[in-house]
Length: 450
Image 1 (cartoon, rainbow, N blue to C red):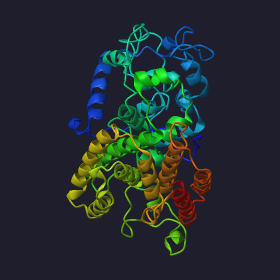
Image 2: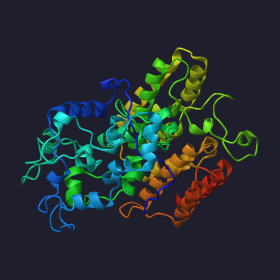
Image 3: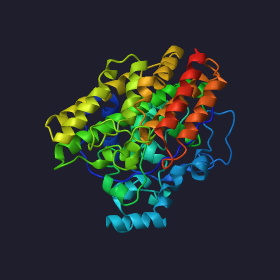
Image 4: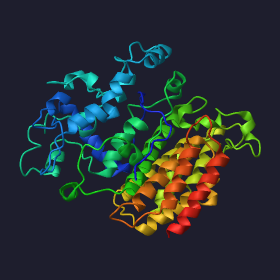
């Protein structure tokens, strides 16, 4: 099926945070090693990849494993290629004025995610910051492997050993994406940045992957070289990676905050709602936390809990109750807030490691769909961010069930998914009761899919 976009913000900025403990996850250790290697490697720029005999062919070439038109696909169709151009807009200039950071095209706060913002002494050759989020943002600084990665007989593993980022590893890919779309030790969309005008950010690996044009060909050769990840597994690993980064940020802010942790880590709709929507039958926001206490941003954590449950991981237990405990301790400034967040982070790190190896079966996917659309879970979809993540999760499930190599899908599931898209068409008009009805339609369709 064709993945659909639901209303969401995009892009991110910069802040300095505490670096996560490297032993928590194999993926974190790998990324730290790649980062250290990148400090020695040089960024050579997009133009170094754009020759017609490399990745700049006008059309995809047949009979070979690499289409060779990757640069054309990126430059003409991929939003990442226009990320730097966003900084030229009047909105970006107004935001920069609000923040007092000068020219957004020069501010690291903006460039860290709207461009490949390599250190100046690491730039060489044809590198241009104006290329935006370019090849090396994801694949890594290329000076050490650019000249050899196309050698006949050279394996993907050898390219990775030379410094290429191993995006074939879904755990690594998820954390590379989440480093901008969720935040990491260098980049984070704070409440102050959102107050200046930046959109709310969200992340889901499977949907985000399919919303961008694919610049690689998944065929038998690709599967032999790199394997293939199902939509459900990409969704699950992406949730674990996003939750891992989120709890790292939350633990750091809980350690350092004088009064409240960073408000961007709370559900926006805990505060930004019509007060009438708190009334019974209002169909709007109903906080999961105590009255007057903001809810932590639990949408992705809820999805991670469902993924861990489908994969029969022990990390699924007590996530929701731990989040409630966290909200209470944050509200009272209890000393347990940071340690609770770190415990949740460690649980997500273990889950990420396990989900990277998970091969979901049809019964796992159906179990996940049943849990997503169950009555207890529907009660937890109270804000737009909850509904947004739940919709993308159902989309990943339906797409997997319709995979031609898996069991055939059910048109009733596709119709029920359309109901979710209608219910999440706009943040401004979102009603939790309408979304609940749409999700009950998914539950009915899911029962017929068994």
